[in-house]
Image (cartoon, rainbow over all chains, first blue to last red):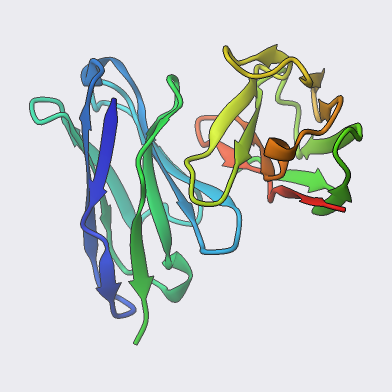
Length: 113
Length: 107
């Protein structure tokens, strides 16, 4: 099983980034996929989730209206489109298969002027 | 969102100690409560799900209890590999949420 995040980097406040998470080793379309973030040295924060067929999504209040989770089951990939980024969105972002407790290694997003 | 709180925020303990961490939800979440262990440089891993079910492969010194709004994680005899940060997480609502974490350090 592998979950490999990419797309992190540095962006100015108000900017956008799209994170990707490529999955392998399990039947991707069967599972809800989640994003969780962690400010370095701080706690885990749940961000968003998407159902196996992509028809249902849920978000934390802190990102609702700014972030969009999506998936492409043909590519075994889940995405997190992050718009209107703020300094407080700076964190390591992890994708995970919550049901099976599979986690990626994380990708760092830094929002700073 | 359902708010989760944990106490204490940190503690120091010795190998062999019994350790108890509490978690409280801002509303009734039945037994939809999970406990995670997070060690630096590693992915978090689930220890307990549905409040009291031990994840396969997790040592039996870990146990969980509670329902409704109040939950407890107990480590019956702390081992060196248990020094880590522990998080509770609710999966009752459509939007999950974690507690702020409890860091267990070496006394």
